Image (cartoon, rainbow, N blue to C red; front, side):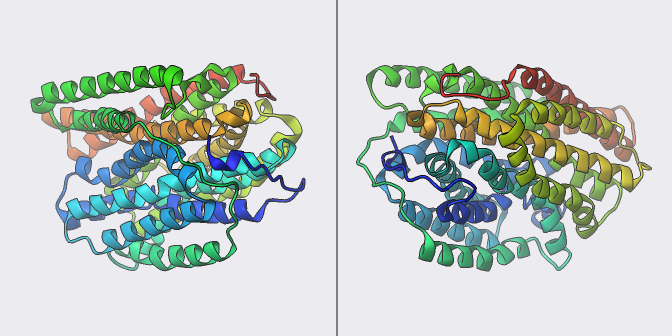
Length: 476
C-alpha cells in the first residue's frame, strides 16, 4: 500500500488542500501535451515526410507509454516522498519536452514523446491517490470537478492551444512554449509541496511490467497497421493476436500474485460492481473523445482548408466550456448524485457523434462548433461523476490499485480510439480510391464511417449509465 494511505490528514470541508491544487496544476500542464500534437499532424507529415498512420503515433506512443508506466507508479510512489515523486515526474517531463523540441528526426521526436509520457504517467496516480486520501467523502465531487480540468479538459484543449501556437511557426514551438511554463510550475510546486505519508520499501514484479508493456503496445500497434493495405494484413493480424495473448498472460500473472504476493494490478478491484461499470463507461467515453479529436483537425485542415489557427479557434469554445462546467458538475454530483448527470451526458455524447457522421464539404462551421461543444459538455457531465463514483466504491486500501487501473485503461482506450478511427478511415479511403473515387470524396466517406463507428461504441455508454447507482459506498 502506498505511503500516502498510512497518514490520512483530511481537509476542512469546502476547501481544496494546497497539495491537491499544486498537483492539479502540474497535471494540467503535462497532460495538455497528450493531445498537443494532434493539430500538428498535417504539418508534421509534410515536415518529416511521414504517412498519416506514422504521424498519429506522436499521440498514440504518448498514450501507450502512459499505459505501460502507470501500473509501475504504485510501486514507485511507495518508495519516494510526495515531493520526490513530483520532482522526478516533472524533471523527466521537462527532459522529454526539450528532446522533442530539438528532435532532428521523427524517431527522435517519438523518443522525446515517450520520455514526456513517462513523467506524465506519474502525475495522474499521485494526484488521484492524494485526493482520495486528504479530501473528505462529502467534498470529493467538488474537488474532483476541479481535477477534471487536468485529466479531461487538458486533452480537450490541446488541439486548440496548438492551433494558436502553430500559427506562429514550426511544430517545434509547441514544445518550446511548454518548457518555461513547466519549469515555473515545477519550481513553485517544489517550494510549496508537502509530503503525504512516509516512503516504504517495496518490491515489483518486473515480469508483469514487461508483459503489460508488450501486450497493450502490441495490440494497439497491430490495430494501427490495419489501414496500411492488404499486403500487411497477415502480419498485422498476427501482431494483434500476439498482443491479446500477452495481455492474457498478464491477467493470469496478476491473479496468481493476488494469492501469493503483491500484484502490479490488483484485479480484485474489478469485483466492485460500481467501479467496474465506471471503468467501462470511462473507457468508451475516452475512446470516443480521442477518436473525434484526431478526425476533426484532419477534416478541417485537409478537406476544408482551414489553417491550424482557424482549426484551434473553432475547437476552443468546446474545450473551454468543458473546463468551465467541470467544477459545477462536481458540486451537482455532491448534491444530486451521478445518474442525473451521467445519463444525459451519455445521450448528448451519442447525439454529437451522430451529428458528425453527416460531415460534408459544405457543412456550416457553426454546426461543427455546436456539435463539438455538445460533445465536450456531455463529456464534462460524464467524467467527474464516474471518476468520483468509481474510486469512491473502493475501500481505502484499494485506492492505489484503483487509480492505477483507471489511468492505465484510460490511456489504452484513448490509444485504441485513435488507432481505430484512423484505421477505419484509411481502409475506407484506400478502398474507394482503388475503385476510382476521387481522393477528397473517398477521405470524406472514410471520416463518416469512422464517426459512425465511434457513435455505435458510444451508444453503449447509455446502457452502462443506466446501471450506475447515484451514490456508492465501499461495498458496491
